[in-house]
Length: 140
Image (cartoon, rainbow, N blue to C red; front, side, top):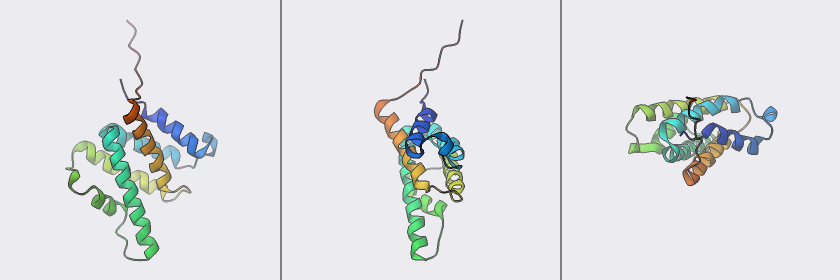
């Protein structure tokens, strides 16, 4: 069995942005990176990581609005996750995927936090319900 993350993410994006034809261009590019994060960390840790990314994104905007020195999203994310990460291979993959997803959205209309909201909602739903997709057994 595998979590049906992609289908649930699609549903969440449909609720947020409407029909697929009306989605922002970055939506289809962000989704695979969010799936990497989910698949490497699992629903609980991924949900927590998305929340840390939200904190980093907000901090980035606070600093920009204040007009002070900007260290950037990656630095603020590093501060948000503090010593709870030890740099395992799954964590490294999630880290790089989050930075890529954030960078992609910098040149598109919706705020990155809208994508974070969708990802957090999916992780919470999977965690709460154990939503899984049973893979069909191969024919004998």
